[in-house]
Image 1: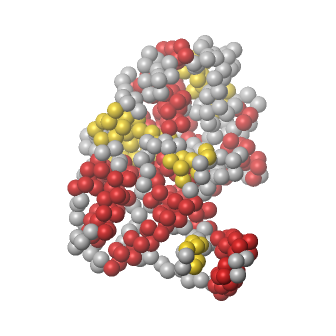
Image 2 (image 1 turned 180 degrees about the vertical axis):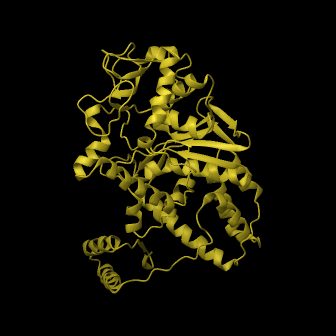
Image 3 (image 1 turned 90 degrees about the horizontal axis):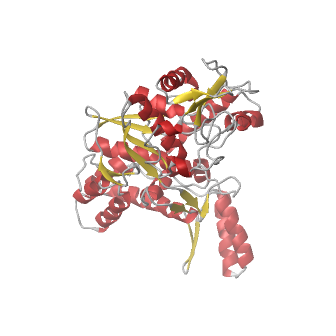
Length: 448
């Protein structure tokens, strides 16, 4: 298997450490539900693990749970975990456990194989403090006048290799990092440990006073500890390339004196209906939203698989519905092709998987097989599904119309025949709210 490495800007062979693929994926900050854009990253790590397993590798995957709450430009008083706890009027750790549980439920719905380890930041404070002390002892970190501990960026000569952002080009006050210029030696230094100040929740004692860990240190501490000091493949969204992964690399390499990560793999952004997904745009889509519309969550997985992970993707309700219909068709055909659990390797699909996770090409090949006269279609589909994870051998459950749905459908048929288009549109909205997808053709309306 070859994957594009962000640091070297080229395809690289995936290697192992003593026969085991050590993989680290930056996990969620559990202060809210993960939307479908977040979940695209975790499908990326799942694909790598599935292909590695198919190729005979043993996978040791780590995915951190950030339940302390710091993200990029957050300041002490704007901690997302504490904000959500205040909004819901419950303890911040209760917030963390609530959304962590819902995160795992969403992963299961998307057939994402669980990682071997899900370390929580709140339970790894000592691990982080030990790493910070090593950075201080080796001269890469210092205690500022404000009681916070900072990484001295200029001491790490290889900074910028992943993102291309060089230290001398970073302007003071850039928005990516908590800063206190009066306490730092250099404006691009970042906090490893933040002094608590007036903050009283989610703080811990440390050799440098009461405080809490910085944004980047947890990934260095957890990956080095749980993967024995070496990461074969490090996965994350493209938005983490800078500053998070740049700073993480500096911390980890400074401690061990060599490259801690072989391959840096990043998934691109997801748009929805042509716009960036955000609360302010009102277009945040959750897995629950798909289910409420009668769409199999694995239709989302299929949509992701039909796009290259390194390409920006525009997801739409139409594409999700089309994927849902494709899944239903394939499962129906699988049942007519027999019940054999055997698999047969298709060399084109095998090559696509190994060539930078080219799942779109694998799916195109499946469509060719579907229309072919081959007598082992089921076995070929079963092979592809070891990686695609679409449960293609699962019997498709037919949905029946409720009396209410049938009544509205009949009313809409009549409205269309009488050319009452406004009434027809209003009835269509009612049907879609009930979970039906309506198609109008020259032959009349159909539903799914």
